[in-house]
Structure formats: C-alpha cells, structure tokens
Image (cartoon, rainbow, N blue to C red; front, top):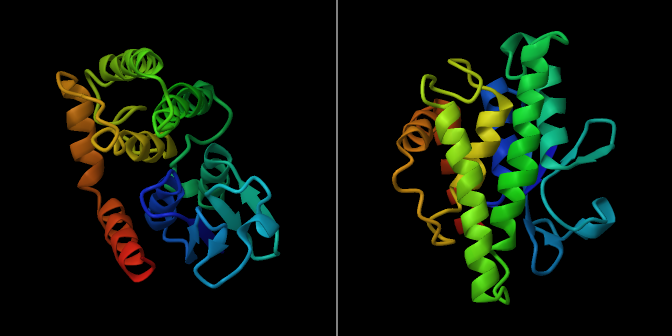
Length: 206
C-alpha cells in the first residue's frame, strides 16, 4: 500500500492506524500547493479531488476520504478491533462517532484555514466547533477513549483534527476530558511513530 499524505493534515489519521495495525505501507508526500507528489507525480491524476489522504492499494485502486480509508484499514485486521466486530450496536456507535468527527468537527476546523473568512463568520464557526467538542468532552467523562477503554479508528481521527487547534487559535481550555484523551492518544507508540515520521517527512520535503 502507499499512503499519499501531507504532514500534519487529516492524512495523519490513517497514518496512525496503519502503524497501529502493523500494515506495511509506503508514505508519499503530496505538495498540495503544486499538486505534485515528492516523486514528481501529478497527484490529481491519481485523485481528481486534489486533497489527501489517498490510499493506493496493491491492485492499483485508489481509495479516498478519511473515514472510508479508516474503515477499510480496520477491516484488513479485524482481530485488532480498531472497529468493533460484527454488526452490533457498538459497531454502529463507532461509525456514528466517526461520522460526527468528520462532519461536525473536521469540517468546522477545515473552514478556519480560510484566510478570507470574515471575523464574525470565524467567531461563529469557532463557537459551533467548540460546542461539538464539548459534547465529546462529556462523552469522555468516564472513559479513556471515545468508545470506552479500547482505541478505535474514531480516536485516531479526533486526535488528528484536534491537533490543529493551536495553529488555528482555537482554545480548548477547560475541556479536561478532551485534554486527558489527547494525552492518552499521544502516548501510544504508533502515534509517536507516526508523528516522528511526519516530522522527518516535512523536513526532507521542505
């Protein structure tokens, strides 16, 4: 497999999951400003959407969209239970949470990268995002991770988008359960490995 990524982008989530699952893969940096990969490929020829992540499968197929890639990866190692097994309620609860992170938090944070966003619109967006994060803070009251004590793909996704808060000047102070969650995820070996690898990729491709 090859993971097309941009260091620090939402592609960090599948990067973490690949390492959690011990799946061999090749990281390929995409320079989003130019649309070229580190190897000089035209990224839009691979993924016409033009954004990361994109996962190149061994048969040449290209899979896109964070939440779908995460589910695909979890399905490759069902025994790891990064997505609850079967089709019981816990399975759908995890997908529910994954969708919430994607549509309500990722989407909200993403809009804040727009330098042309008017101050009033930015303030309203931040307020809306913080309400959504506060909801998850409440859910984490009596648990380490979003689904309980087991780490899942939803945790990798939430951790990734919350990592943008400092650069976007979104204050997560007062959300003690979120702070504890971020510390727990950051302490995982696979997360440390992914962050270290992306730091090195950023330096070597700057």
